[in-house]
Image: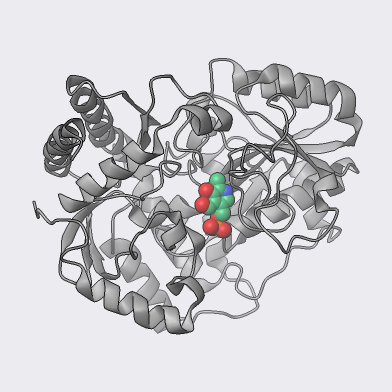
Length: 447
Ligand SMILES: Cc1ncc(COP(=O)(O)O)c(C=O)c1O
């Protein structure tokens, strides 16, 4: 393990950041990589990733639980996926504006994996897939409002980039939150089509469906809340959501951009036993390449079939994406894949829980399979507002810096997750737990 005082051996990242900032606003190409998302004084610049490791521009090597924020479920540069992509480019091309046989091969695999998905359309990103799902729900129901939950993220399109992490002063009462735009630039009036609710609260959903059900096209939710740290659904909550929406003719959309193909081949819906009407997948599907999918009930998808709801895109189902996704799904479908992934992940989650409990820190490790986060909080966290009120962000920041300085990489935001890949070994986890033991002592010393 590489013991490195955080940022004292990352000078080249600092130089590269200064150079980038001159021509790229904020020096990065996504908010999640920005200084204001926790990467202070600057994000690490990456030289390469290999399996479970990342090497930064200064040659420091980290055990990587950031994993590109989720796509690298097979680790970095999985040879099978790389080879499939190289073969496709070298032998066939990249973009044709015409279909290839490989697209239906991929669609068959997705349909076979997910009982709720009878048909599927492919696109490039989770943002696009959510946009398509909500458009389709509106077209199918003839209604306009979408229910979404405070603290979730469904991509950055104008229609849903609201109330991700609003300041509580602006966000209205706990039981009936007001929509809060992510920032300036949203078209005026879009929020009239949104209803924001607290998550893990079936009564709040029941009430709003009772009063506004005839206007609601869809309830859009992550099956686990993965964008305010990791919060699990309370027993019965998703079942209640399924029953309430079905009864009111509202489509239930599962945003499985993070959970899909990660919690099992059938995603969170398979693991938790809930059948949504539409689902959205990205990240894990492509093994590191940009590809996403939106699918579900045949009667809903048939609006696309008839050309009534348009889904377009120059790069949708491009050869690279399809080759990568086909190769990735073949890897994920190998016998024992998820059992092994879960075993390594459980070793980490339970190990971290033990380390933090033994140290007497006010911490809980919450997660399912290869998805988890540490909450520094005296109380369990059920939703976004509880996270805002009870989670100790300053302690998380010290935890993050302590782990980073000991060669363990994850996102600096307490509202992000740690991801485990098939490339992580029990030895990686044990080295991580050693780092956690040291870091916990440092936190106790207040250093
Ligand atoms: C649950 C969820 N939905 C949608 C998105 C957007 O996906 P993309 O970044 O591929 O546009 C994300 C991205 O992190 C996500 O976590």
